[in-house]
Image (cartoon, rainbow, N blue to C red):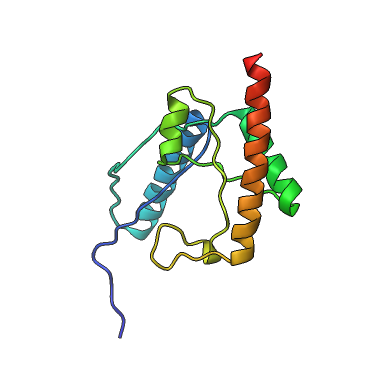
Length: 144
């Protein structure tokens, strides 16, 4: 038996470090949804749930964080984001800020089934220690 859905709701989470690029992404998504709706002879409506301006972290701290990770495990992944972490508010207040993440199994975080391999946690602690050393040296240079 075939069933037809009368109502479908989709949440779209778009992230980019450049506000104008983020706005373009939203316009492109709206245009695509309207085109698909027209082709399918259905209606589409948009409601904004939440919006934040991208928060940029300190480029020197990002570089040091990348170095610390590379020195620890050899491979660095950057995760550009518009995070709702406290760190974003710290950065917005003008305090040099960066965030370091450890890999979660299956990419699941902020969920009761979130898990991380013990060896990844150990590498993250080692990388964080390196970053702390680099940051203290960086602060020392700026205090002179």
